[in-house]
Length: 159
Image (cartoon, rainbow, N blue to C red; front, side, top):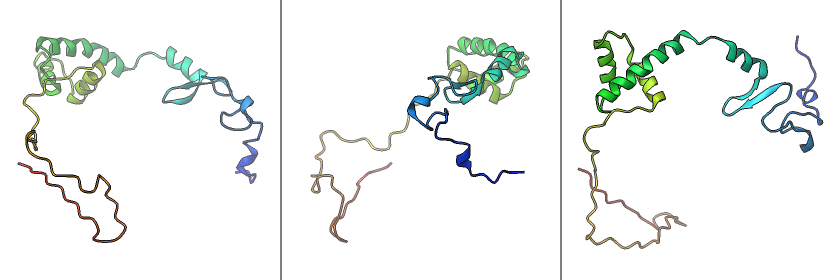
């Protein structure tokens, strides 16, 4: 059964929760109240949770990842750093290692490996350096106090 007391009852003025109460009552830097530790990007985590995580054995996925990482690095190095996710996946399967493409993608991201991207990006507009530029008649001020006072156009050629 829920209490009918307002929520303000739980956040008293003398609370030690950071950001509540008096500035001198705040918890020390890096630690929250009641045995919690602040982790970047994770918020406050209980100390017992961290201890249990250290004691817990590695998961099957983590063990498999540790087996695959050296194989992925080896195939990537043998290709001269040119193979991407799809080619590394196919090379591993040819050698008899069953692996999913998404697994190789995740591990390559974790290892910081990338394949080579062939070709050049297409440039849609190539400005001519010697061509005259039209004058800026509004001095980059595109505000108008009334309708039909200012007309602006963009002359971009695309091929």
